[in-house]
Length: 632
Image 1: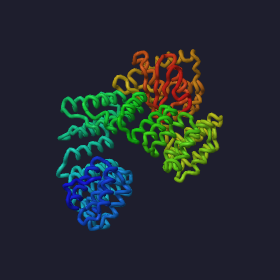
Image 2: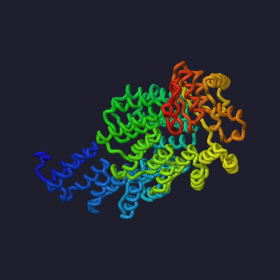
Image 3: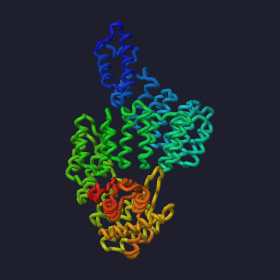
Image 4: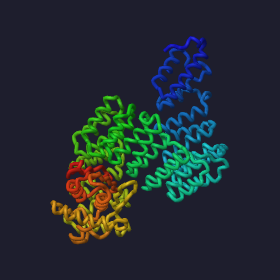
């Protein structure tokens, strides 16, 4: 590296070096930053008195997200040369790099050393508490802010209020808001988010109308909440008012927020509008990695996996989050072989996988029955990739082994876990016990699950169903009575559809829909046609419904079975859409065996593709077949 000829003295070279370091930090160019760092050492500038090169190098590493190098440089700076900015920079670096507890520990040391704190320090602390959901530390930080006389700073107060709102302490957030002598648009937006989250749409809309100056973020929060709650028409009205009435534009952050809402609700119509808007109204939609990643994630989780793949292939830049989103989307759609091939491509492009990558990989192997591939990946995590398996990795591995019938091996994996297994891990093995009718192991698991998670009804339902299938009705009924005695009811199944911009929800035995009569007429007609085609109701799927059906005779069970929420949704879709239109249904629970068989037959007889997203994965029914190959 050559220094400019105009730099004739060490001090001028040091000034030039600081400028280069700041530029590297702004562009997150750590390679160039390391070269400048090396040059300062070899040219004897590093120890130049009062040059403060260590400080600017610390900021460069922190800006590039290299926590270890930033901390090493921080420790090398003499106490006399360390100021508030240096401490705050490292705190913020820890927080942004996924080490929030280290950030708070550093703040404690900072206070112990009696280093002066400012409003930016408090913003970093409150932001870290928000990420952790640690309101206790946040409250202590608020007290510290008051003692230091920083409560007049709007930025710090907004950050504290955001912490209270995100932690669900709305009374404290509102108190801070009411006490503010000076408010800005961020103050109102933070309060709006909290009210919408914890107090509902009605109060949120009232507050939204009171905001004196609404920016794009406030509008986006309001629109996103409408989308998440299925009020699509109202969301589009707000969008129209925002863009055409007030002349505001959606930036990348707002677009990602809307896409996230679409992903949660399953509303692909709004997602397509956002995609179209971004292409027309922004210049960097195709090059913005965060937006493109959110877009492909939305398409994948709304059932449009081919659209997700097209977005992925069109991206010029990808990060590990992008790859994880694509791998996870493919896994949900049961495309295990594609996931394995794409992982190889990821490694060829020198992209370093993380534990989330392997969660997607193991999930794909589980849903596709790729047992050997899953074993190879799981047992190579530490040895090959240097990754300590996470709880999610263990849950996927247990699920993979359990689904494929290797229950003893799955139990051995649980026993070998370095941490205590959680509800998901134990629940996965219990589900496998139900499928493979291993009731003794199931009983042991239900005891552990009851101790850990007494309010979860699904585990009792699974075991009760297993006993009923084994003909042990007394044990099955005892579990059911236990639930009733404790006043706990099974979570009802709900299926959601979006037809012509409107959201329609159905529960089992739904009678409140405006077109109920037409739906049930269609259901009766379909049932007759399907039975002629060979459909036989599987009443074993109707053992425990929480409403007493489990004690009913076969005819009553069959009637209840035919009114499952996803069947009603399909009937509604058939009478409201054109022939050949694909139907997309989103269900909150796992699809039962009977509905699965029913959907396959409907897709063949009525010539429709039916895509169902249940709690675990996607099922794409077409021509009488399912994308899961009956392995789910």
